[in-house]
Length: 360
Image (cartoon, rainbow, N blue to C red):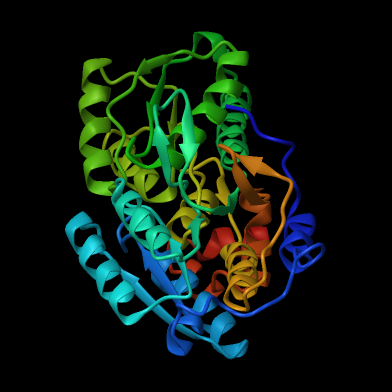
């Protein structure tokens, strides 16, 4: 995989805001209806893999488009590829000036091809929409807006290395289980590659690596089977996100174990587990920044302007947002940013930890 250097959050947003530079203004093609040319169509993947899609991205994207004078049709496939295709077809029938697609198990590929045949630009949002092989992917969407997902994995991997060292364990001798995301999600590979890059440099090799999923309950089942195969011995668990980490932690709790565990999304449950010391850290991805970058890009396209962006991934323009590692002492930063409420986090069993780390 070849990419140009990643850009930071401020630079990413500046890029999204200043893409007009060197662009020609105009109006949508004459073949587009007035209604379609002012309509942004968005497809979200599910509600199970992360609470962010409905609680964060939907309202953020909707507000951005309506504030700019455009309409937004935001649908959620709820973890069903057939439903994804049906809802997207309905959007296309009603008319779209631009499509923002979060892929779900490859369902966005056919939707992207249909949209492009109609002359509708497609923005791959958060997850890449690719063709080709895993070793040589090619971006199918016209633009990609996401976080630096290899960096997400690197931060997760480093949290495992640091957690082992803090526990007095030699990473090279540690029993570490790898719990990745669904391989059908292009980001899962990026998370995995980033984590492995850091962990392997520290001498870590996976003692077990079940097939990846984006499902907390299935992740718990898979981890329990892996733990049994290891005779109940584990020193750390690299987990791709907070939802899966919560499943893993239920199994660790049941067996009276507390070891370094990684995650991402800064979900309420993830932040609680971080404060309780059950999860070493979570990677915070400020979805508002990602939504802002994607909506600004889409609004330019709706206005008939052709953005330019020199940063690329898999051969297409890429706007990247930088993730942030959140340890117990950094949980308050997520609350301050408005992406979590102290009242939701600081429940009875977590209240003392909130007081200790200044979460209020």
